[in-house]
Figure 1: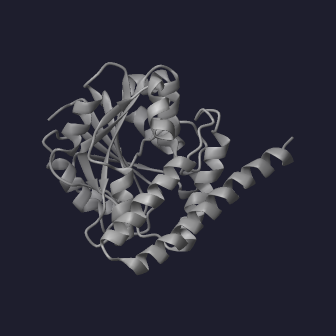
Figure 2 (figure 1 turned 90 degrees about the vertical axis):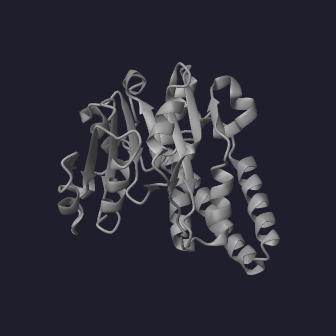
Length: 295
């Protein structure tokens, strides 16, 4: 057991997945010293199940008080590890080496602030979702710094708290996550780290199973929030457009669906892209209007 690793998981009504996730974490080759569950007033058996594991500490919060940045920051500051791994309740390690590989990449060079893992689509996911995950989470690891912006563009700052390890000392030095925040606390912290001379990484061999086949309404809502926060933080992100990555994603998925003979799925992916685009644009416009109304 490595006393230096803490795992933090925000939960809300996770009774169908929390037991499997905790057991998977306890079976890791690098076993965490503690698992902190921050529960937002679950009205199912989430807390009851998690409390059966002596390694787990429960931090209850009011559902209305949950914040993507603030809640995670609070939990990290109460943790004991020198390295902190954030996960979401619906992700599960793909094998017993997920944490070990995350931490190995985090320690592989000096001044790495955060390393995120690879997300693999669930076996029952749609072909469209599998291809999206393949594009966003390739099988090649990397370490990125400010001088790499010309190569990676907006992906220089990419990070995901679905599965990510942080150097706690660097995290605290930089002031931690921003809050209040609707989404993307992970990416904005990575951008802050890179802009301050630190590095952000991606560990392709630190794998978790995690994917979602969202409805068009869910995709619109998700991208509305994303667009709002991306517009609010565009200076932090160096005013780099995400459009080129979006076009690359569309090309990758469409070609993949053609190769698989999933022609109807191309139409479904088209509607999904429309929901993403409209949501993103509406979110950005909402932020601009909020700024105008507050000046």
